[in-house]
Length: 290
Image (cartoon, rainbow, N blue to C red; front, top):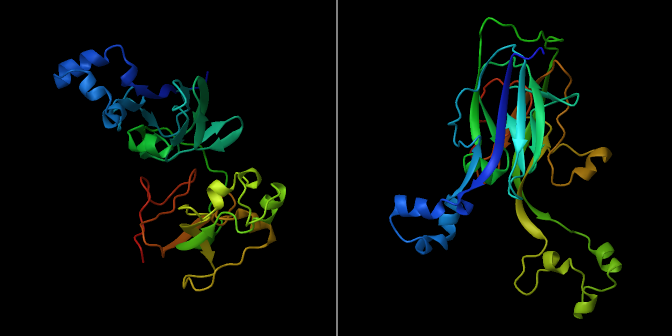
């Protein structure tokens, strides 16, 4: 009761390599013997269809709603260990278990129901945030139109603007700058050569015998005090645990967040806020180096 539209979405990797009809498909479409291609890894990967309701790359029709409608999204997960999905809805938020969010987790043989009352019109993506699933086509589109209905009335008007200055920069990150605790726990010294006294951490942290060790060049997001990006903002005691993570961006309902983003790294990067209205919808803009 009280629901205007319902949709059922199955997120699943359909592995056509396991199909009873694989040999028939090879003979019909490739016109060659099955064993000639079945051992090829690229061929196997091409037969794993990352789909929503059996369709990929925005081909799922009928996901059309009106602004202000009460919509239920029933999300299903099936398959194998490959089917760990983060189902994300761009553009509008969901309500699940008393919380407002824009995504949910799906595992094999689980399901979830999310409630949406869209207040942002346009065409947006529904996709799996697992990166290789997204690249392989597990993404569809839903449209929100103005149909004469009114969305929920906002509780507060805009109160103020909070500006944050964020820069992407490259650092040499050490995953284990202090190994004293680990070595004490495993009762061995840095010069120990006996395998019985070497900790398992040597696999990841040693830079001997052709291994890289614990230090890697990384791109990180860091906060600065102003738009000159000359003075990094010091992390207070409560933020020391963040490590490689970027800064907290604090706001209250009704605030406008103004993010000034500078890319001082050597590859393109972007910044994108989930679950809030943006000035521009769609894919976040990419900031090129410099």
